[in-house]
Length: 396
Ligand SMILES: *Cc1c(COP(=O)(O)O)cnc(C)c1O
Image 1 (cartoon, rainbow, N blue to C red):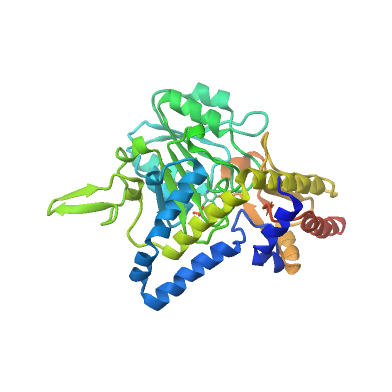
Image 2 (image 1 turned 120 degrees about the vertical axis):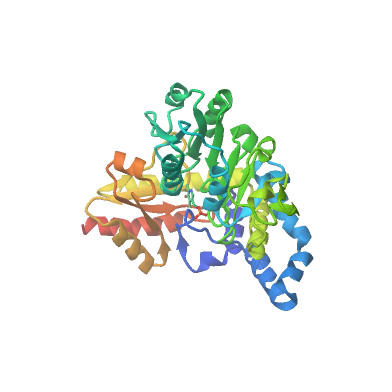
């Protein structure tokens, strides 16, 4: 947990904290000053000396991004690819898996829309079977049910560590153990969890993990990364290759790189890449564990306060909950809550069935307010949000 002085320092480091009350950290968190400076600084360098020349000048810091991301998640730098966003990272992993007809994909109730759309595309294209592992009584993926579903046709277990619209944190370490015992690939969508909770890919036992820069990691937009376990890299041929991922060594032959950068393209947002590296180092300097404890405590406080509002309903599942709070207020349109809060410079968003259809239809939910808390938020900010939502509930 942070001391009050650390919270104060985090807020002073974050210019956005003076402009808005930001509860849209699961959308894009506020960048701290070192990230802003590294990102804008590189754009300025590009404008002064040329884009390629600026990349040469920053070569060491660019490598530093791989090292920082690797350290943040317990990987090695050659297991990291930096790409445009979490979706592309996940896609590069998923579409490199050589699926055969009849292969099974096991996923969770809370899976993210883009991932499921890819499963469905693969089902149509190749004839794989997509199966959803039921939840346990806490609303998280049932590891017991997963064990029962396992057979040698399970090619991949693909799970969102923290779903896009709720407090649920999936039991990824236990899922990883099942995957390893079964010889299935374990693909983790860590888009919401990197920067929100400590991540250790070895402890998780995952083969592939995707994430983005702009969410809980507090980096710039338009950049993300993929982790690929070293032993797997040379077994997975990316669906797309370019002259960075591979080398054209003879008129009819190419050779693919041996590290995870085979999943990258040559052209990249260098300023964003640098910013993401600084964000990773910043997260580690702040202390991921301590920041996580604070943001989770704040989120629990917000949940309690929402439940105390007449008609207030919290929709977060799981045993250990994270920083994303999803709620509704009886008789009040979630979008009206978002608009009313926006008028007070309080940022939240709404999340619909189109993001997590399996989960939301099973629970009869159409749309929820998503208020995602970071460690730089304060109790006073929560008070302000609850005051406004409470007034809307009383007038409903
Ligand atoms: C936001 C999100 C994504 C997509 O990340 P992008 O960086 O927007 O591609 C994937 N999975 C989950 C769970 C998310 O919340």
